[in-house]
Length: 273
Ligand SMILES: [Zn+2]
Ligand SMILES: [Zn+2]
Image 1 (cartoon, rainbow, N blue to C red):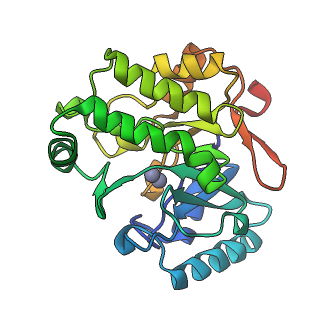
Image 2: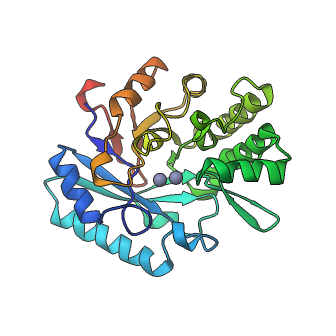
């Protein structure tokens, strides 16, 4: 059984609960390791990222919680850095690198806000060509490990978040496949990919992402994976981890985990692996 999660949000930004409420929930769920990953400062999106002041308060609070709950649970202070984040990656135990926006001609288009906003961006900027939208997205994803010094790549195929609502790529399109494969080639050896169940807990998807086909390709490139809930609520810290694990196994992964910036390997399967 997996008892750790490294992608966790709090009410410092868009999560529901305080960091301490989340820690107490994790302990009651029997978790052994919990990594916080608040949204790193991005000046263009003050609503969905830490302010500079809150960044310092966040680091300080997690540092205190580590002490308070020492012996009960291992806590990590991570950060989810967007491609556009201006935070300092070296101030954290680890970094999740994610792409949440396309910025075109000075206009910021959020990728995961709603199916309607996605359609608006595809139609306005890319004249309805979803492959072109995907190419622009995956070009950034392919660079996000270097840009953010990421240890983990967050929700690799975020642009499929609304696929079940009818807004998403044609998975069989050669241009779409070439775009994600190129991104994976660029990321190979630089960071671990996450299997993300966050869109499931929020009701957008019935399966984790990335897809089985993408995970198999990542495995062929020698990649590693970790399972994360991208949780914004204290009760969803390990949401659908059984499905995430089944997907990882189907893709051929026998170990799950990543190495943080201090060189500590976090083995998500414990003795099972
Ligand atoms: Zn994210
Ligand atoms: Zn997140």
